Image 1 (tube, one colour):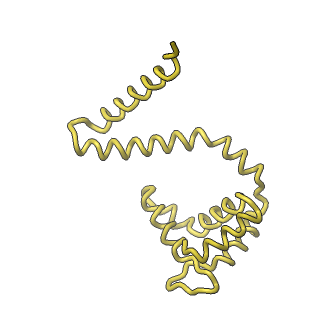
Image 2 (cartoon, helix red, strand yellow):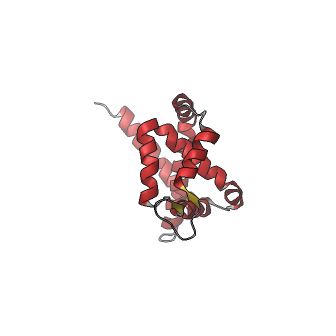
Image 3 (cartoon, rainbow, N blue to C red):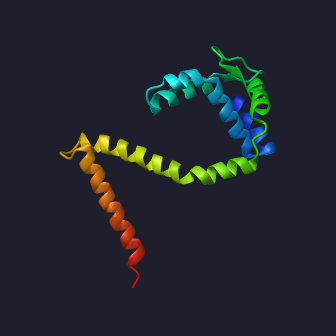
Length: 147
């Protein structure tokens, strides 16, 4: 997002807290819903959202091919998602934290396995198996090696 536009968002964050970022993110996702549903992988969706955010203009500065006005997007965020509370966000964070961490770990592992397999004779599955063996052994060592 252009710096000038990000300043508006950060001002709202300082005034209203983390829920502003959450509401803004929901609004950005809503604006891109159809295109996101057509994405085939995470890379496509990240590129789509990055391009959208790059085009958010500050009304004091015009951007060629603007995707939206930061003031309008913030206003829409409050109107469409203003019922979201900090308690709601914290409950959802707690509810999905483990699942998110596990998905991040799995995504990272797949990426590492794909890159490492190009440089060795191990398959992706063998690399993943080695990772899990090391992970279990490190866990056992850290938790049961107290002398």
